Length: 219
Ligand code: SAH
Image 1 (cartoon, helix red, strand yellow):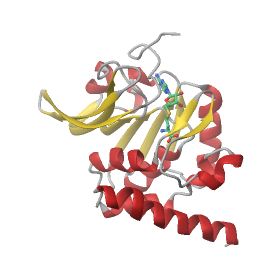
Image 2 (image 1 turned 90 degrees about the vertical axis):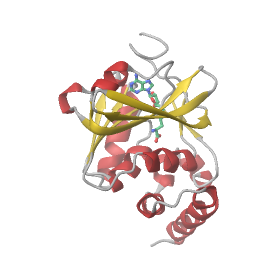
Image 3 (image 1 turned 180 degrees about the vertical axis):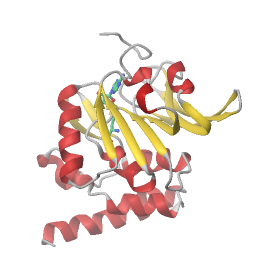
Image 4 (image 1 turned 180 degrees about the horizontal axis):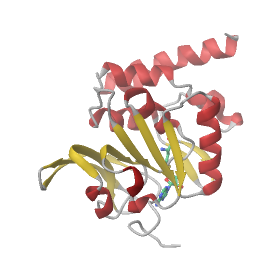
């Protein structure tokens, strides 16, 4: 390993202890994934030195990579044990998808911006995340061809829980989605149990808007 890589690895250990475990996330498989995925590979080169800071960063096209704590929190709420098929809406740079791929069997991630989606696909391939498939399109309608999903993670803010996503949850499936106004949301955890959906409110958060049919704007 180069000195730089050793430094990044040490920064990841500190990030997990100070930003994530200290705030109450104890799921060891999630912490392990956060220690493993090289976050600096997912941010623009000139921002690499800030990759392990306690906040979001710009990734181009007006979009952001989420704060490490939020990535860990959302992943932990899905209670994955390793055999699940997971859908992510909003691939962005692919970081969240890489974390999910360490704790689930198969990850499908949908990105609206084709340039971001193509770059994420190339990056995830290069880094060897072979159980992630990046799809380009409007994820607010879900991804019917691989449904149902054991877990769904929505990484953009929705005006309400998108109906098609509820319909694509498997029995016992979980979904985490930021719901609320464009400038502030609450993370909602939805569990499908029989014909019912049980909702639980989580942390306050601020995501970029979900676009598309069941999002804020139709293009
Ligand atoms: N999970 C990402 C961060 C996502 S930022 C990461 O780890 O980097 C939110 C992303 O959602 C943006 O890239 C945005 O382009 C995308 N997005 C917004 N609306 C979408 C839609 N309807 N379908 C798919 N992606 C969407």
